[in-house]
Length: 178
Picture 1 (cartoon, rainbow, N blue to C red):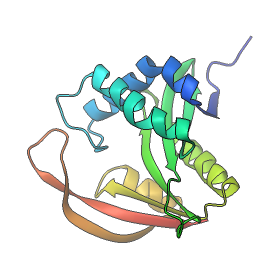
Picture 2 (cartoon, one colour):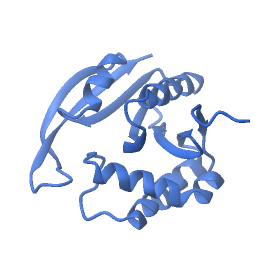
Picture 3 (cartoon, rainbow, N blue to C red):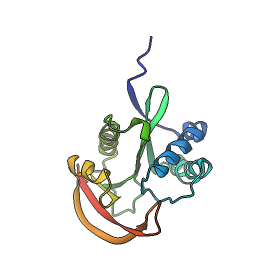
């Protein structure tokens, strides 16, 4: 008998991304429709979500410049985060955290913390000891990142369009030295 409440985090290969495009597309779709400011606005379909994974993430994973960590719970993809370490030659010590996603059905269960801990562990293994990220100012993720030790560098006003409203939102730029 297996424990369906257990959460497992694993690195997804390019083949696993291709095999799970539907589930990954649904994860992104659900997050966008729940108000996540992750680069997309409504209308946004599951097919749009699948295109993101197929056209943006899969090639970067295949080329060896990005890690995709996926959390599974109860047999479903519950969340993901990406570590982009495609940096110029003068920045071999740095990487960027991209698109921390937790499906609305799995929020408030510690998945974001688990994904970020695994991301930081893998960053260390890649000798990346400075992580950067941006998050919409005031989003629920901002205090999470602060609680994980990320420092705010500054806020850029009018950085991105709100996923629901015709307005521009600020973004907060953050970093963490591992």
